[in-house]
Image 1 (cartoon, rainbow, N blue to C red):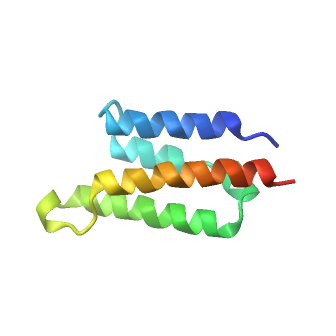
Image 2: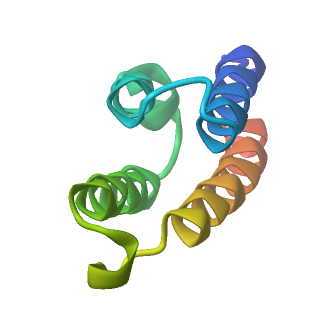
Amino acid sequence: MNHDHTLRTLRDSLDDLRDERTTLPEFNRLWRSQSALLAALPPRYAQVLEDVLARLESAALFAEASCSFDQHDLLEHLGLWLDKARLAAAEAP
């Protein structure tokens, strides 16, 4: 199954969050709803994704100075996750 559209949607939502055109709850809801994509990827992708999304939520609950999770860094990690997910999805049967 081709997941290019889903991956493009996720990339666009990442850009929207960076540019403050969407909220973190909307962003997380979209990302967590991608069960078809996650099913096509090795299980570790879902684990890593959940970890990063949970950290993003934690960072949003606290002021930047009091939280060990930097939102910019976490968004960069999600960008890398997307790059790797694109490669893994392309290799999936």
